[in-house]
Image 1 (tube, protein in one colour):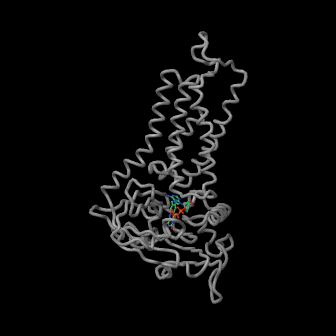
Image 2 (cartoon, rainbow, N blue to C red):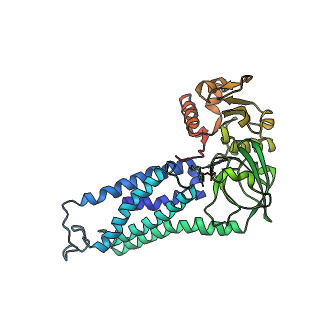
Image 3 (cartoon, helix red, strand yellow):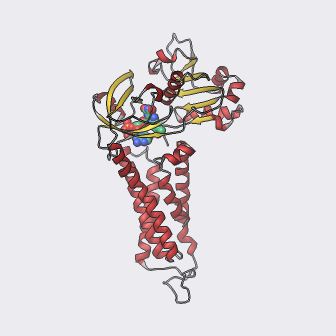
Length: 394
Ligand SMILES: Cc1cc2nc3c(=O)[nH]c(=O)nc-3n(C[C@H](O)[C@H](O)[C@H](O)COP(=O)(O)OP(=O)(O)OC[C@H]3O[C@@H](n4cnc5c(N)ncnc54)[C@H](O)[C@@H]3O)c2cc1C
């Protein structure tokens, strides 16, 4: 019952429900999703062995609630056995997703459909083989919970796309920023645009039906105050991102937005530190641009790490700010910071007072984010002053 309940909650922790992920944060939502999946797996795998010694062979007349017997009826057990095999496969495929050579979209589809199938099998098993599930009240409870959870897939993959269809966008420009980074801008197609906050991200679908699984999360790099056009800074990485340069202006796009909690709008701290590694600069640009467009008077310091000088994007704009560029493979003539964004560099850029009092927005490779977050905490920064969002959930 614990395993089944957790699996049902997992549907709501998919990261596609703004009310959940925008309140507890996307990283926490996804981490929680990963951790409790492992707990559900453990409970599910262990439970058949907890029945050792219990009389089997079907219901006895003196045991109407089936508390003292377990069923051996294969039709009730078969759904449980199927789920018993499928659940570990679903979790293992998710854990080793990156090592397995198949498309992300294929994985996502399999993960969603597999989870829905497992939930149905578990419903059948719980109601027909469970000791309490067959009681009318419990049957209705499990049925309702399963309907809500599996129904959430219809919300995400049917209802939301239907709404997106009525609010389409068109690509207005595609610009190469650096050898492997692009800026893609979309304009509203006959509607008022998007309601978002600087630092948030959208699920972007370019050139496919709104019902297609081909959509990817990208941070919005433009500022809400700059108008209804929405820009993304995109790094070439895989199937879709490597084709950005081929996208023609005029192509239809759909946005499911706005998600994410890298938002400093209503923060009270006297300064904002923007710490980016590579493409992690995208949401931070949005924050910076919004602050400049709205005349925000808070102090800003930017630390922007890259491997090489030709990966540094928007330097014209950033050079006007208090920015520290960090290169791990600098050219010989480089006068600035070198190496990685590490504690020593942090102590050179920020005073102790700034570390304790400012809000830190961190986005970049996981390793960099771990180092920065650990260091800030060790130097006395309150954890609620650190806003972080990962681009990849290992
Ligand atoms: C919240 C968030 C914000 C992001 N913002 C940006 C951004 O501003 N700029 C940018 O360049 N990148 C950003 N990314 C990363 C971006 O989503 C992936 O690089 C992109 O989806 C890769 O797609 P692909 O088809 O080219 O690669 P693929 O070959 O399909 O996949 C390569 C890897 O990218 C990741 N990925 C692919 N599709 C998805 C997906 N639908 N959801 C989550 N991860 C996926 C997976 O880890 C996958 O293994 C962000 C990711 C997240 C989660």
